[in-house]
Image 1 (cartoon, rainbow, N blue to C red):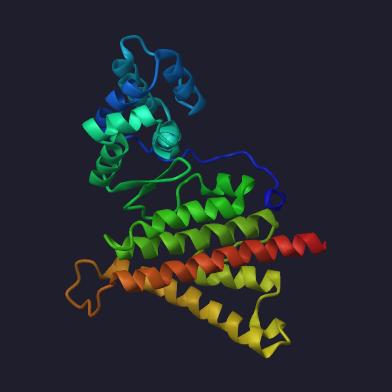
Image 2: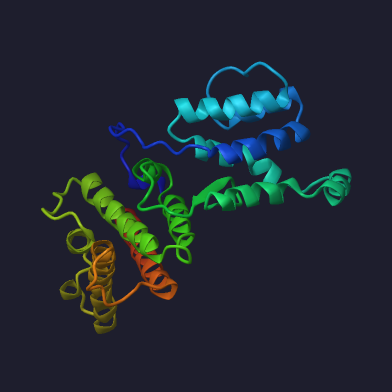
Length: 285
């Protein structure tokens, strides 16, 4: 999918995604017990942590380096995911398994610490946030290098909110579709609609990609594409109503997990369809 994008300079500084103090306190001693000083230096640097190795013993080094990332970097939590990936994903040696049996599995302690902060770890070094209100600020940049992976990561974050906060999941899913549509229109040099919400953005993208029902001769495809327009309108309305209904006595419905799951799955399908259709058209050209 890399061919989708002509690279552009980043103009917006991403919002800070810091490592919670409780997670720093949990991870520091665990990393100390698993790695030598030299291994820790290499691991932190490979994970993108800024600066030279801090002084002190191994635990102090880990704590200070994670705190430094919080104060100096915009993606400290993303770095943390890469930092623990080897520990979380690797197969423990037999002697470590024996140790885990006696002292407890440190990976479970990290997962428990993440859960207390409403975060979770996904294999591959990804930290999923339980209350993400929209796509991460880095989504536009990620789309430049690997569109499908970027979308999957963002939707995994949205899926993580469904049980605890389905309204937030809907908000996140809707915002991701909007980001993908804007990304397409800007990259193709097309004007953005006056109202940059999911329904008008999707209308412009569909028109340009030849996905409007009126542009199709096949009746079956017409029906499916008509459904996508309804999905865009419905997901957008659900997001708007959920947001405006908070604190109002006239709210006559409540979004439940099943509603959030339906909206997130539908929005995910739309985003992937846009990217795959875009790529197919570029191949034809």
